[in-house]
Amino acid sequence: MERIVERSLLFDIYGDLLTEHQRKIYSDVVDNDFSLSEIGEEMGISRQGVHDAVKRIDKILNDYEEKLHFAEKYLKNTETVVKIKEELNGLDNKESVKKILNYLNELTEDL
Image (cartoon, rainbow, N blue to C red; front, top):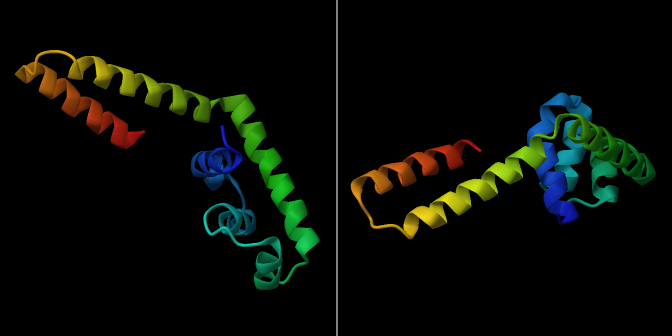
């Protein structure tokens, strides 16, 4: 998985487990694509301090994922839903198939 996408997914899943300070720094890196210097200036810390914080936060988020596997399960479930939709689209468009597709769409929104 591309590093940016992986960071974003892990932050979406586990971000609430970080401190407010960590969330602010990581959000600026992942969501806002700010440079380390920009974040440091905004937060009143050095560029190196931001760099170290980001490395620590990466480790924290990866440790959560190694223990809980929520991102892995999310990606697997998303792939399964896509496969089911593809199979259903290949069937005759009966009313029950349309209902199942609607349920899958609702499920996908919650993932």
